[in-house]
Image 1 (tube, rainbow, N blue to C red):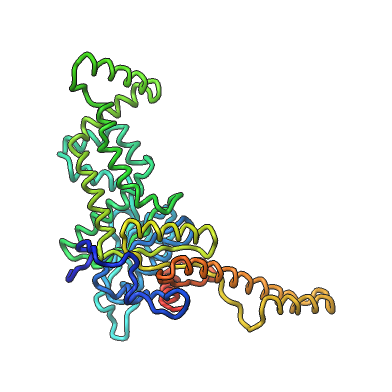
Image 2 (spheres, rainbow, N blue to C red):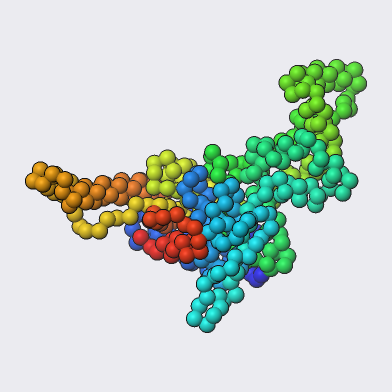
Length: 408
């Protein structure tokens, strides 16, 4: 891998909203140049984020496929529990190991200019296990991995999935820097209740694991014996009533075994946060053309700016396609009304009404985008119209990529 790929460092001089070659000013908000983003070899990480159900997984896969077919060595990491990505990419199963995607389109000379595409799906517990195994001795790792509290923590603790998504990103990035396997990582962020969870989770989980409070409660008293023993006894008694004696014992055993790894989690979380802030990272906020989704997108754009993270633009996904013809909604409705009166049950009247309804949907979505652009005029935008069916193969992903690359 050459050049500053994969976010080699943080710059304090760049602007918070990245435009430059990624945007062209053809309207009230700049259009995003997706191909410029994918072809920019200084961009090593693209993070697709947004609220749940807006098509982040499809967008991530389409971007990864397009980048690979334009010559990049790409891996796409998805956290979506629905296995649509595996199906679309022709892979029976996705897991924590990157798997090659076959069937990439070649050019007239029969090659892809060196491009390749691997896909993987986050295995939350396996990733946590890998962290433990890499940081602890075999004996200590075995003790941790078999602990009931650790099993519960690594499988279902709030924020663990988001933390491990960023942990896996850090692992892939480190491997890519070392051996040059990839020059672009595309990340599909977790389908969380809040689109901001994956930014907060590393600090939240590392603070829990590295917190002084949990150590005070669960480690032997080191102060004046009588005072500390009495205080610890009160706390332990209360926790026994709340959690149960066995759970508290499991927690104590876990903390004792995990003690040497506590500090590493905070350090790793900080490194991940800095990686997300680096110039080689580009965030794409994905939203549906709906009020709630665009409000969430606006909040996310503002949060990225506050955290000094590089925003490449907004993808408005599944936009209503404009109907053919030049009739306005009002004209179509008026014509439909006249025809229904003259000829009840007229097929043409029904079609005119459908035209009016579709036109109004398009106008409403355009107004929502205009409001977003007025509040965030520097955010480049790509609008992807809704497709008639689900994306279930490479051809569908390729079509989404083509639409992403078109300007409005």
